[in-house]
Image (cartoon, rainbow, N blue to C red; front, side, top):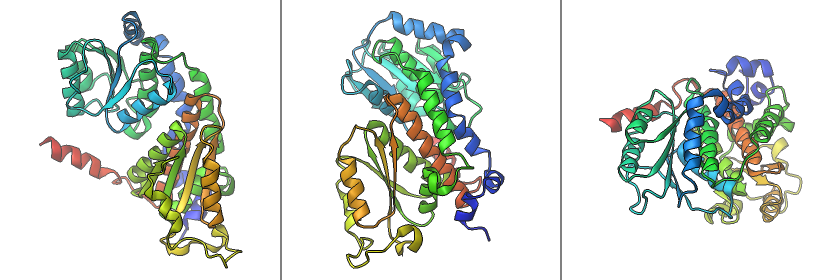
Length: 377
């Protein structure tokens, strides 16, 4: 029987076991960013929508409607804007809107499926209040239909055929273009972000050996250990959460996630548990000797943005001193959006490798659809 380690080391076996070509879908992240960034040229209606947003000027606040991927979009926009944002950026899951949201605010709907009743209800309410609204959703969806009733500018998502989990950039980039047109976000280098995603696809590719491929290394460790993914920097934190979300969705494996400097407070306690290194065991090597206490020993992932969080080195040293498994990935790109493209690609590649390694089948994630149907009754 092929072990997970043997499977991840064999590019042909990986391709054969990759149901739905998920690794190829992740490797196309750069192409998705480029396509979404070229909306003005590819879709005249989208260009008109963005021009209308620009003509109305800067809003009092930006409200991003959405949960799951939509909430990630809101966090990415806030990270790109940074601490110097000239307006507040708020994520609202729906169906209710905060009482203060009104006609001076820009509501951005980011929906990968366009069928959420909570988002539909919030969108309708935003229209009733006279808010400025931009909807990014599949053009034939229920949410897109509601956009017309709410007098919203509609930007049809260009990648409707892709699996839902692969549509992050297909809604994020149009949403960024909208808030950029509104004067909230400075002009972004989308080509640089696409290049960062391409670089990630090369570094984390199936033919890259495990010992120099962090995505494979993290996935392999997640088959043997509980994993804690910690982010050092705004988009590193988003990427750690993305890793946890995709590992659960794609492989059914739980991953803790937290951000520096807080680390959820309690997560630092993982360093003090029974998996901590014995002072007498100076020659213990987690790679050669395996888990210290079987499946209970945690493995750690530290995602970091170069120069953003100086305490990352302290955490790295503390984990290393305890001889616990640690994978560190540092995004060294110059802009926030580039670093996001690189680290999110890492998270997605890792989830793909993990799903393949544990043999997750087509029914993995079926509970999400079951939940949607049962709550819609």
